[in-house]
Amino acid sequence: FAMYTKLVFESKGITCTLLDGYVATPILAFAVGNINTSIGIMVTASHNPKQDDGYKVYWKDGCQIRPPVDAEIASAIIEKENLVPWVDYGEQLRTFEKANCGGDCYGLSDPEQTRLIEDAYYQAIRDSGLVVGIDGTSDSQSPSFAYTAMHGVGLPYAKRSFSTFGLPPFLPVPSQQHPDANFTTVPFPNPEEKGALDEAMAFAKEHGCDIVLANDPDADRLGVAEFNKVDGKWTVFTGDQIGSLLGHWLWETIGKNSEQPVAMCASTVSSKILSAMGQTEGFLFEETLTGFKWIGSRALSLQTEGYRVLLGYEEAIGFSCGGIIPDKDGISALGVIATMAHSFYAKGTTLTSHLQEIYLLYGEFCSDNGYFRCDDPAIVKKIMEQMRNGGKYFDQVGTYEVDSVRDLGSPGYDSQAADKKPTLPTSSSSPMITFRFKNGCVAQFRASGTEPKFKYYIELRGQPGENREEVSKRLDTMVKVILEELLHPSENGLITPSSL
Image (cartoon, rainbow, N blue to C red; front, top):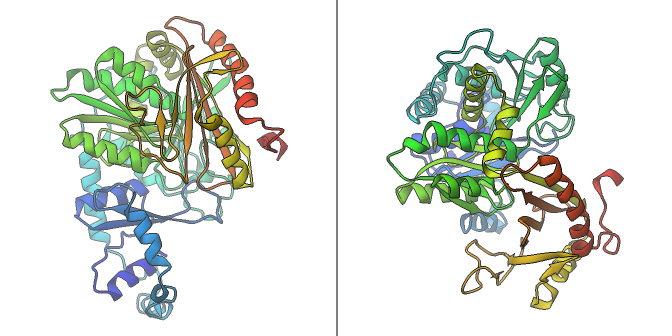
């Protein structure tokens, strides 16, 4: 598909650079700005099963396309003259294959340009301020790392990231280190998925590694797990927990001494801990719609306003550190996490224990994110209308008092705003409803745009110093009430994942 794409562009007289070999998605996003292209295209299954290949499109700013460009492309695809190939591209490709004796790209790629782009990317990491060094860490104190590319392209990029950050080498998981389109050992190669890191953690334990770092196959996401040698258990960090660690680290190492005002962004369904951090430390925090196209585009806008954007993240283990690209970047993020771990281990602490120190500073943030299977869009619409209650949004759910409500459906509503209009964009096709409770809980609901799932994101903030177990218990009780009272799962025929 990548080679066909080049042929399609060039059939219309448009110059197209095909990057050589297997390339990580962050490199493509970086290349758009680095060589000043009008658009970028990435062909990848990303973190999906092998049968679900994907076609990611980036605009000239290096950020994923967003309205109105996405709708205009979709409209052009179905125009009559575009429903059949303009040229016999298959014959063209076979000609290149014969002339170049095969090879990954049949002679269509530009190896030298690819090398220059990759060199510039790693130089951008050095120039970003993210590389702070690990001086003072003895071998006995240093954490050791296992790395898995999950059958994707990440290994050479992860190795060079470690080198760029001045870190000692990691141990790659042999069974998952090379590109394998069949995803042989992990059918759903998403580090978030339960069991996806089992093989890497078994390898790490066997070789005495403290931490597992995992990229998804196109290396734009990052998963992290840490082994506790005292109790022999693993902590697999959630996206929100990694975001918390990154946000605090980037503030402490870069932000607090920045001559520019600092900003951080996260999607609205991510944890509110960066908001609490920003209020305490004095940096700007902004939330965006779900999806990195919104996080990245807002980060670009904040940069033009004079802010130094240190972090953008989403709970689905996507992180953009240091403003290198306006998209998820698992390559630079793993270098930041590994540097952070070296610093903590040198002081006799760990990622897990430092995360608890963050919670002590800003309060525990316990979350319960999940979904119900729902194959009927009419049911989703019915549930949304039930939550709207005819425009008289509930002021109480069970025994829990509602502080405010935001509805990002059309025309939109936010009871917190003076004009009752939400600051985030609204959509009739992909609405989201948020209930903010007086006890600090935030519950958000939306339908997936790609799967038959009705998703919920519920988070409860405890007070600084409050025991996490107590906050978690309160959240568990509250979640049961919220889901039953607002979604009526049995009545609406919603299916729990455990029933599938």
